[in-house]
Image (cartoon, rainbow, N blue to C red; front, side, top):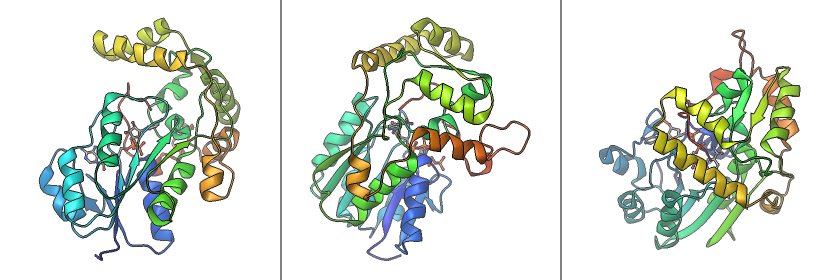
Amino acid sequence: MSADDILVLGATGSTGRRVAHRLSDAGLPVRAASRRGAVRFDWAAPATWEPAVAGASRLYLMAPHDVPVDPAFVRLAVERGVRRVVLLSSRAMRDERLLAAEKLVRDCGVEWTILRPDWFNQNFDEGFFRDAVLAGTVAVPVGDARQGFVDADDIAAVAVAALTGEGHHGRVHEITGPRALSFGEAADVIARAAGRPVRHLGAAEDYRAAMTPLGLPPAQIEAEIAAFAALRELGDAEPTDTVRQVTGRAPKDFTAYAADAAARGAWRTDGASGSADRPGRVKRGDRG
Ligand SMILES: NC(=O)c1ccc[n+]([C@@H]2O[C@H](COP(=O)([O-])OP(=O)(O)OC[C@H]3O[C@@H](n4cnc5c(N)ncnc54)[C@H](OP(=O)(O)O)[C@@H]3O)[C@@H](O)[C@H]2O)c1
């Protein structure tokens, strides 16, 4: 352990795993933390916080879906020496939980950067859409509104720049891929790459029909439909140039992502899938 350590939360998840790898590949001292990580950290077990954070100078701050960022942890981190916080927030689905986390970080008294990525590409092969892809239909009630799907590797590259470089303090990085696609277009790209039929179902009743048999409470389904409707109302997402500006290289295109995932066997069901490197499954009903 050193005072230069960078504490990475969610280090077994889609972004944290990539952030931790990039930092350690660069020879930087990383504490890769989560419930199953090299360093134990559990939002639900405050006794794990102090040993994880004490003496670290920088923090990649993320909380899993539906888990709030606890203000007591951020206070503790700053008290124990953290001087820079990079928060994973969201561009697409902006709820009270993430708005509160953003406010907390802006007010925490040390250098901060907020990352607002759009939908992760990796939802389709590592996350909560994978089962739907394998079943052939992905129900997301946003109609044909185009989304700024972005690769988790690009999010991690921006996060690492913010953790280690200069000029990011006080900035909000809106992170997208190079072009916006509708879920229908994304499903077509995956279908071609995976060599299996995949269709998007974009209406509220499709979502109800998909979620009800899974046992989700009706009130939750309706709340999610309302959140998706609000996103749909925003229309097509406008891609940003953040990845290029921050990292100096172009963000990965969705077609290249799908080709790489398919080549790894991400959507194979014959036992040769690339799932060994997949993080713990995100529960169904979660979204960006
Ligand atoms: N998916 C999207 O399209 C999208 C888009 C924008 C923003 N986001 C935001 O991104 C976040 C999810 O990030 P991600 O995709 O990088 O993570 P992820 O792949 O969903 O993985 C969750 C991570 O959190 C850890 N974790 C779970 N429960 C924990 C607990 N109680 N205490 C400590 N760690 C815990 C998991 O590791 P262990 O199981 O080892 O603890 C894992 O490392 C959410 O806040 C979401 O709102 C998502």
